[in-house]
Image (tube, rainbow, N blue to C red; front, top):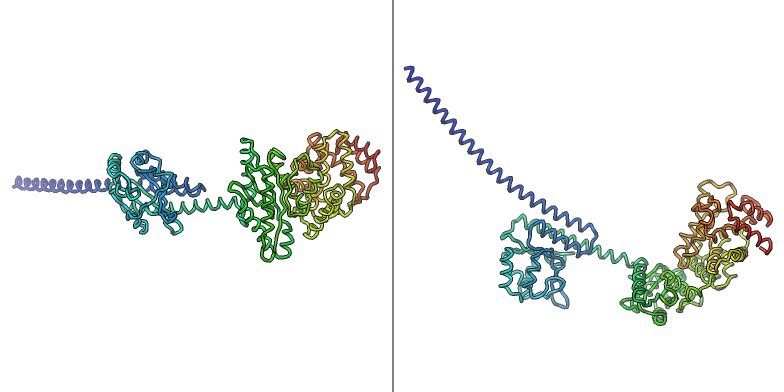
Length: 630
C-alpha cells in the first residue's frame, strides 16, 4: 500500500513537472514572440526617427537659407541639394511656370548637383537648365497645374515627356532602368496665391507613403515661404539702392558706380563725364505752395532724367534737390550737349499750380579737368554753383582744378552751407545772407563780409573787417615760411570758416560771464570737430581744408585740443590760425575780461612762445605786426 501510494505521489509530481514545463515553455514562447514584435517595432520606429531627423534637418537647412538673406537662386539651389542628399532621392529640381506673349513656358530655376542630371541631358532634345522651354499645353499636363495637387506616378518617362514632347521615349526609359529611377513626384508651388511652378523629385522607390507625401507638402510650403522671403529680399535690396521719392538711384549706389566707372575708365583709358544738377528756387516753391509741390518739382526732374538718360547712364538723387548723372564714355563736349538737352527738357515742363521750373547744371569730365574722382565730383559741384551765381537755368563746364581760385572754393562752400541749411539758422536769415552773397559775388571783399556776418551771429562783440585783416596777416606770415600757393589758398579758406562750428553752440555758453564748468569747457572744445566733420565734411572741395580747421586749437606743447597734438604734428596752417585768432581775440571785449590794446596782446603772445605757440611762428608774427598795420 505504501508503495502504491508513493508511486501515485511520484506520478503526480511528474505530471506537475510536465505541466510546469509546458506552461513555462508557453510563457517563454510568448515572451520570445513579444520580443520579436518589440524588436520589429523598435527597428521600424528607429527608421521612422531617422527619416524624421533627416526631414527636420532638411527643413532646418531651408530655414537657414531663408534667414541668410541670399538671392533666390542661391536659396532654391541649396534647398534642392539638401533634399536630394538627405532624403535619398535620385534627383531634385524646381521648375518655374510662366506665360509670355500668350505662350506658356517652363524654366528650371534650381537643381541638385548630381551625376544623374548629366546623364539625363544626353537624351533631352535641348538643355534642361539655363534656358526656357515652351510648354505644350495640349499634352494635358496643364490640368495638373490648374488642380494644384501633388502628382505621383511610376511612369516616369511619360511624366518627363509631357515637358518635352519631342523626347525619345525609348532612350529615356533605358536611362531610367539603368539608374533605377522608379517613380516621380511633383509638388505644386505657389507664391502670393499664384502658381509659381513645381518641385520635382525622381525616386528609386516604387511607392511613396502618406507620411512622405505629407512631409513633402510641408516641405513645399517652406519652399514657398523661401520664395516669398527671397523675393522680398530682392525688393528690399532694390529699394536699398533707390531713392524712395523719385525712383532714381540713391547716393550710396551712385558712389559705388562712380568707383567702378573710374576703374573701367583707367583700364580702358576712356573718358566719362559727370553732370551735377540742382533744382532752382526749391525753397520758394515750398514756402509758396507747400512741400508736396516741392516734391512734385523734384519728381518732375527725376522723370526728365529717366527719359533723357541712356541705358548705361546712372542718374541718382544725391539729396534734397541735388542730382548727379554718370555718362560713361562721354567727353566734355558730349556731356555739355546732354546737359543742355536736360536743362531744356526741365524748363519745358509745365507743372500744375507751380508752372515752369528750372535747374542749374555743372559738367566735369574725367581725364580732361582731372584724373582724381573726388576732384571730379567737386569740379562738377563747383560748376553747378557757378551756374547758380551766373543767373541759374544754365549749364557750366568745370574749370580744371588749377584754374579754380580760393575765392570760388570759399564762395561755393558758403553757398552750400546756406542753401542746404548745414547750420541751424532761421530760414529768413539764411536766405538773406545767400542773396547778399550772390549780390556781392566771387571777390575778396564779398567773402570777408559774409564771414563777418556769420561770426557776428554767435559773437556780438566781433568787429566787422577783422576777417580781412586775418586773411592778409595769414598771407604775409605764410610767405615768410615759403609756403606754396595752394597751401596759402587753403589757409585763406580756412581763415574764413574755422570758427563756424560755434554757430551750433548755445549763445549763452559763448557769452557766459561766470567760470565755465568742465562740461561746458568740453562742449566749447568740440567746436573745431563740429566745424570740420558735421558742417564741412559733406561739402565737396573741403578735403584739404578739414585738417586745418579740426586742429586749429592744438597747442605747441601738446596741451591743446581736440587730439592733443604737439610740435610739428600740428599742421602749420592750424598753428598760424591759432596764433592769428588769439591776437585779434585778445583785443576784443569779452564778458569775463576787458579788451587789451595791441602792446598787451603782443606781450601775451610772447609769453606763450614755446608752450602755446610755435616759437618760430611767434618770432615772424611779431616782426610782421610791428612793421605792418594790423
